[in-house]
Length: 309
Image (cartoon, rainbow, N blue to C red; front, side, top):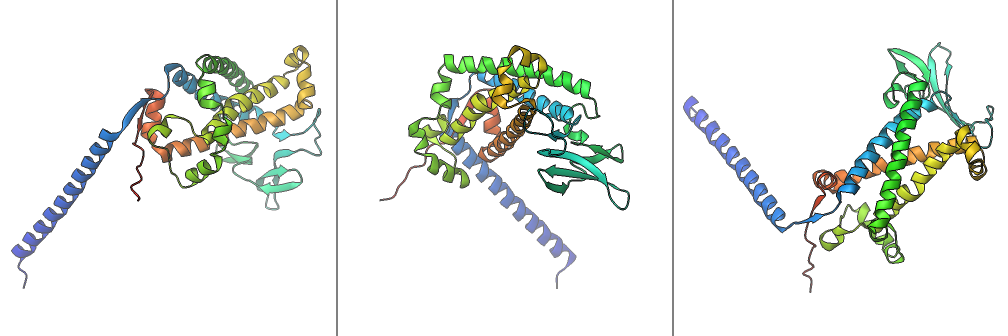
């Protein structure tokens, strides 16, 4: 028969044993972490100009994307060609009232229609369902305010252009473009292997971690030297003033409405790049990745050694 005193003593023993196991596990983790850090090499990965230009670019893109959605909401439809074909939009965010009198959001892509109530076409504004292309939580400013959205968008667009030109000039001057961003034929030969490594979440170590892999080069090159110029040029094409100065832009993009559609696609391509970029940062080690873009220093694990015969 167990007495109250023996039961209390047993609980104390179990608690002490659990505490010892937790303490031992914590100490073991600390020792493994210290040993791992002792083997790491601290590599100066990003220079000050690259870091500063990166963060300016991130802020500009975020504000431009949200203010751009505010501008889009003034006419939430896209067309292809020189003029707006209201009867045949490529994309249309609209709303309609159902049989019960409720407002429903509708997204039409070509001839296909989808119910997107609450997100696209119709969303909650101050507790009431309201016709609105994109909801107020993704636009800047939140309430429908076209004039202010245009001011935000155009102001940060010029900062984005200047910042981009400075980055390109710096990348060419320091050979950062040729050394780190330009995909070479030798890089493309490893494309299949790099895709498999990314699927398996196998990140480079040792000397390989000091250089961008072929997928990173393709992504960064495409964003900086293709997507960036394209979003700027299509933005200029939508301006009648710029068209009078550079009339060839309308010919290049097939009309102002086509330019607006391409501009919209570019904006969401930037969003897709951002999502993938953040996911990879989180998987590769967020502290190490973010620290490298703040201080420039990146911790590299030693390359694995094969001991097979």
